[in-house]
Length: 137
Image (cartoon, rainbow, N blue to C red; front, side):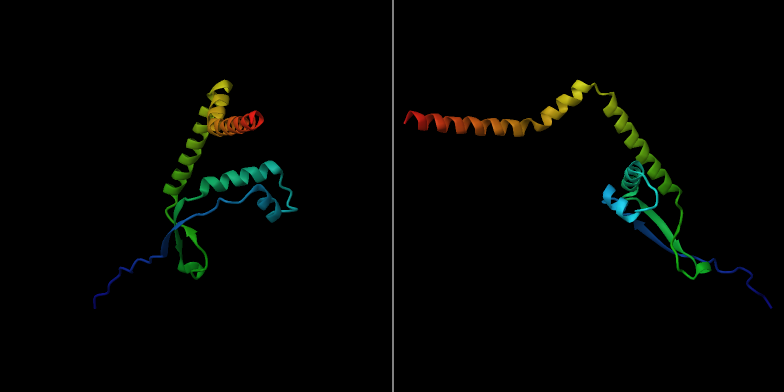
């Protein structure tokens, strides 16, 4: 009698999920973790870490050994590399911003608010013209 010694390979339930971790403010973390000894800087770092993980796609799996009760990371190496790449990109952007001379940063700030300043000036000129015409009449 011939027996098939090969067992069928067990496959877990696998899903691709996208994390939505951002959106909380520091005060939300403070309320949630109240009385656990965290400092304000730690809450800020928690927010920053959640922003890095936000939108990350992960493969997760459910296995029979725990009766399909919990999700486990499945092939997470690629996701880990993606998070590390995000961290590197953010650090590089922060360093570039710090390398800019202070006057250049101030100029960028001024240029970003210039349209609203110009609108306010135009409104003031128009108002002054109307007032000066009414004084003449």
